[in-house]
Length: 128
Figure 1 (cartoon, rainbow, N blue to C red):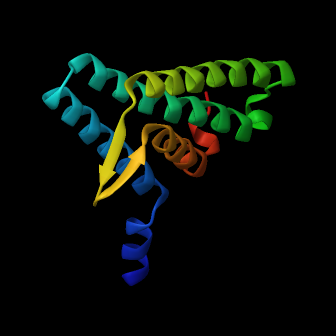
Figure 2 (figure 1 turned 60 degrees about the vertical axis):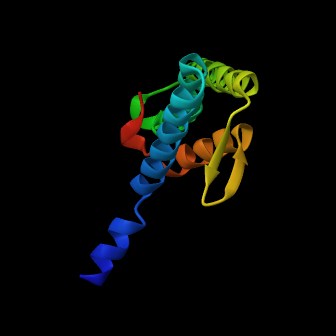
């Protein structure tokens, strides 16, 4: 019983949930206090960094099962790199910050946290 509760609390999906909820709260806060466009850009930046990383990691882990060649991984990695680069450009443009329990996390570092979460959460089954 205690093991099941421990696994549920500390599962890898909780990282994704926490990152997604805090990103959504930040974007909604920006939309209500300032600009809807900036809030949408923040939301897009968080999503692009997470999904760009998850796309490449999943494809890399499942490369043998999917029969990917090196050129396939280069193509997938290029698309993922473009998505992540766009997310950092959006973060630079919006200059957003995530405030959590009194701590202020710069948008650049928040995107790195999202990329780390995607790296830890993605499995072979999540590949393209």
